[in-house]
Image (cartoon, rainbow, N blue to C red):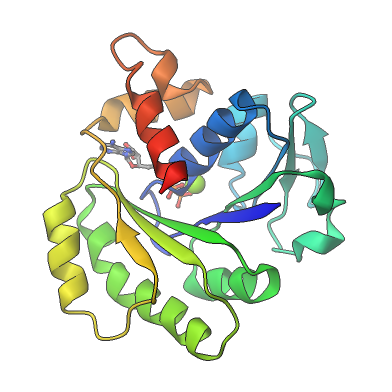
Length: 214
Ligand SMILES: Nc1ncnc2c1ncn2[C@@H]1O[C@H](COP(=O)(O)OP(=O)(O)OP(=O)(O)O)[C@@H](O)[C@H]1O
Ligand SMILES: [Mg+2]
């Protein structure tokens, strides 16, 4: 079982985009997935079901491969379900950085994906969240693999930003850039369909597959 955390403490930077598409890729590869929506807005839940959950910790099956739980209080996952019965547990984290710290410390993710959309604050935020993850590592709490994901933003700008951050996690990569598809990703999220199901966007599926292999 692997635990995948999609997090960034700024809003609108791509956490839900990553989480719902990762779940889509992994179910197509015949894995069993638990998707944990930690956002009060429950956008990942909305993407799959088209409605809102009724109460915290509601869990619903989307298919026999994917269950989704709404966990706005960020309860440790071992309390939520028999997590060993899943191949992957994916978190769509809420925005505040302390929430992310709480989830990292309680759940020990194997992989952390940090999306960076073209919003100016998305790349700036790396100077807050990378040192926080590095500090958790220092305390020997975790040693996750970190992947920073340029969603339509500039990989060079991210590389340049990281050079001036003092404390960075031991294992991090900056993935190649996803091409600029702001309107298209917004539409996919709104309509609850994977972006690769839209015309001329079929190739984007390979991009998400490649992220999961990094
Ligand atoms: N390839 C891309 N090119 C340009 N913009 C992108 C790309 N991928 C995602 N985005 C933009 O990033 C934003 C991501 O929205 P998303 O809902 O996934 O963010 P979020 O971090 O989950 O937000 P919230 O904090 O509200 O939960 C959207 O506005 C979308 O247009
Ligand atoms: Mg979101």
